[in-house]
Image (cartoon, helix red, strand yellow):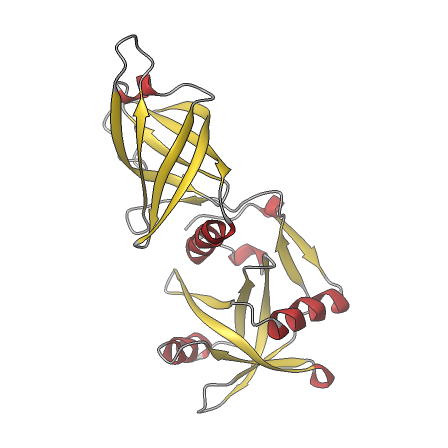
Length: 249
């Protein structure tokens, strides 16, 4: 599982700041993800903050959907802690599990520390056979005989700020630094978004056991230059579900 760089995370121990984020999330009904590593894999479930008991320094959460109740129950079974991620505030923390009941309520202690992702940066996810994202687009070449080709590629990595994919030596002739790609269709977990971007790097990639290549290829790195808030949230949520944030909490 991919590690989130520590330089992306800023730790905050201010009780006032922590309560402000948690309370604002509850009042505005913002999404919350509860998660834990189980059997080497990250298991997540969407929850909402039902009650904040400031005088007891605790909050009550419940699964947002009925099908999530069992997942949440499994996450806290035999565990003293539960991890939380607030995507709209890019904040994550770990809380002590105090109690749970048959109605689906889970009581957790308010955290003493939160870690926030630097908003100037983006968590980047290296894709694997188990976790995939695809990009498709039309691209003109740079020869005198102009030709347009449809590219359909598995993403090498992806974030809410850009993506990369692998091309062959022949395909690489279609790409130069600064090239614009006006309409990339990015598909993650059967959800598609249209994004435009610019080629910011072209790197040679030698075959190795991890990338499974049989020959030297090229990694095309694209930075988005137009992305709407909905698409940004889609990609951030996708990256979060699979990137390893265990070190942060």
